[in-house]
Length: 326
Image 1 (tube, rainbow, N blue to C red):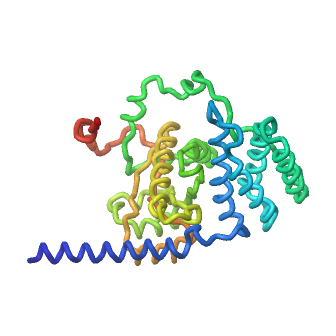
Image 2 (spheres, helix red, strand yellow):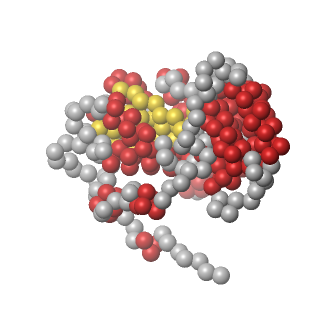
Image 3 (cartoon, helix red, strand yellow):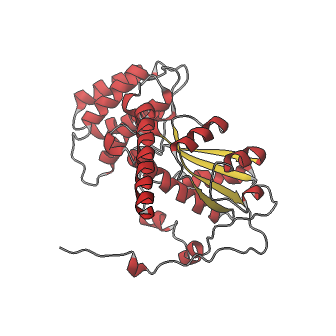
């Protein structure tokens, strides 16, 4: 009887959690975002211009493809460029459209000329020269350049990473943390929207944040540097993307963990599997943006000369891998 009560209680509590997630989706996701918001517009712009990047990257690209996206993009720029300031992706969108026009001018000269004319008018709205982002659109990348990223002994890198719960007193420089962040930013995301945001808290504020997390008992009081990894709900519009912020945020979190590991900074993942009420209480103390959903906390620091860690044995691959055939 008691086991049944526990099962029903867990189901009810899960239901409250789903309702809380739904309420946040309704209030903060991008389904009703306006182009007047620079932050929300950034996600819209990159989502549209990324379709043009994909079109430009095809080896056997079909002439004339991509015009629907190009027209949508130039229309959005005309409506919103320099409205409450220009965002990064507003500026990149202009470069992508220029590269698209270059690819299409031999196939659609009249339409291309009109597109360029509209682009010139958009750029004239800015008091400053609009930069040209060479690393946008489609770029060439050789096999040798891909191979430059190969680790000589990849097993040594991956197998040497352990969660560390006690760190040395050495300070983490802002430069090294930024270095890891820049590497982690290469993490894939839906339509390249890059909806991540990382909050860095230290000292007393870190301790206040950790008070809301259940998995740091016995070592949390020693944590000096804490990252709170979040994703921005404004990046996601379609109801089919209701879980996408968790997926993109999870991939970025792992990228950041491995980037930190690559430069000698250890970490410990602290999950945020919390109730809605705990999330609300946390936000009253730690002032993160209401549109940002917490993925996890990450304690970071340099290892001591000698460290004791959990062995955490891994399951055999045969238990987690199945090859399906027709």
